[in-house]
Structures are given as C-alpha cells and as structure tokens.
Image (spheres, rainbow, N blue to C red):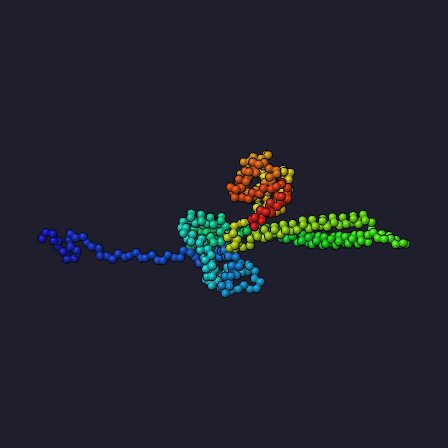
Length: 400
C-alpha cells in the first residue's frame, strides 16, 4: 500500500529516521568553587611573620590574646609576643582564628576590591595605588590571603613590604637619636633656667634690701631740731654711693628677667621640637597605625620667603632650621624673575612676605597664587628675624 513502509524484523521501520535511544550522560554540575582566599595558617612561604608585623601592632596582639584566652607573661618584650603569635597562626588554633577574624573585619573593604580584580594588571594597579597611598596593612593582608594572586606579584608585594620595614627602622633610629639629643638640651636649659631663677631671686632680695636701707636712711636723715651739744647723725654710706648701688641692682634684676624670658622661649621651642619628633617616630615593626597613616607633619617644612634684605637671609635660614623648617628665598624681582614665584610656591608649604621690603607686584602675585593653591600666605610688618620667627610659630599653631 502506498505510503506504508515495511517493518524489518530486527530494526526500525524503513523510511523513518532512526531514533538514538542511547543515554547521553549529563555533564556533572561544577563543584562549589574552592575558597578564593586562604586562611592565615594555610598561607605558604612562612609569610605569617610579615603579616603579623605589618598588619597588627603590639597593642592589637595583646587585645587578640585576651579574646583568645592567652596573656603575655609579666615583662615580656614586644618581640617575644610577636614570635608567639607567629607560631600560633602557623597552625589552626584559637589564636589563629581570632587573628583571621580581626583582620577580615578590619580590612573588609580592600578584601572585596582584591577579590573583584581578576587579572594581573588590575591587581598590580590596585597594589600600587594602596602602597603609594600608605594603606599597606589592609592591602598586604588582602593580597597575601587571596588565592588568585599570581606568585610573581606576591613576591613583588612581599619585597615592597620587606624594604618598607628597613626604611621605617632606619628612620626610627634616626628620630630616636635626634630625640635623645633634644632631651639632653632640654635638661640643660631647664637646669640653666633654675640657676637663673635663683640668681634673679637673690638680685631681687639685694634690691629690696637696698631699698629698705635707703628708706631707713631717708627717715633717719629727716630735718630735726638740733639740741645743744648734740651731733648730727651721718648715714653709713654717702647718698651717691647708695643710688649707684640701687641702680646696679635694678639693672641686674632687669637683665636677669630678660635672660629668664629668653630661656623660657628656648625651652618652649625645644619642648615643641621634641613633641614634633616624638610624633613622627614610628615603631620598629610597621604595625597597623604606621601603615594606615601616611607621613604627616604638623609644621610647614618648606617656607618661601619673598623679598627682604639679602644680607639677612642666612640668619633667617638659621632661624627656620632651628624651628625644623627649610627656607627658600626669592628676592622679589630684583635679580630673580617674577615668573619663578609660580613654581616655587607649588613646591613650598607656606609663603612669607615682608611688606616693608618687597615689590608690590611680587607680593600681589604670591598672594593670588597662595589662594589658588590653598597655601598659607603671611605678610610681615618688617623684614626682621623676630617677625619671621613669630610667623613660623603661627604656622605651627595653625597646623596643630
């Protein structure tokens, strides 16, 4: 019959396409991706030491120890506490899990950014951005604990942090030496101030004694009725000599007072320098505070001085150096071109301009540029060293 097909005894109908009844195995569902981050005890290469030293301060370690139920022994040095934690985080322990939790919570933001950067170029740019910005602690933990960071980039990051610890250690020793010198000078000035105060007290006592003697002599030498046969009472010293003694005593008192004022100023300046040095000293082990804080100063490090008298510039430089600043000079247009002021202001922290010894055009140009670059501009009434010193001190007070 037309249209019908014959059935084969052992096969499908002739003329109809065969149906493949073989079971095609489904591709297995991908297993849950392995964790994209390592636990601190899983990190290879002995990096736990640098992680603990870079990302946690000594105070952080003590606080973590309290959470984990451990306490450093009495008198334990910071290095011993550091070594203990390095040993503990090298294995799965309560201390290691507490450290992991603290670091993950503290640096959650940068961890998400590292996890979102999947190619090496993006990871490299992210590290350079964080390192240049001084945010080393969080970035170092995020990169070292990330499983997808290439080994070459990890080696570079470790090298950057390793060299950073050397630089910080060198700066710390230099600042500590300078602080020791300042402390010695401070002690000497305090002792000198005490001696001068005692000397001033003695001068005041002598002056008061001379005044009392003069008063007594004046009272005793008052006119009186002379009795017959009586002798006129003469003072022990001539009036001219007593006046000279009183004048000398007054001069000595005033000189002592001026010296005490000068010593107090020097003492205050040294105390201020010591506080600035102490604030800039970083711990030998670059902890979280060091990594989170860029190098900041509370004083104007470079001061541009426009105008003034050329013969007094070296003295002003010494004054600035004594107060921890560097003086850069522009003569206001006598020999230096005014256009140079633009670049010099960009490289300085503040501008000082004595209005009695500078051209009007140079002063106005500096004022406009300081407003443009948001930098302090201090016009001085005179070109003397005292006015300049007060200006630097006002910059310090404004920054603090």
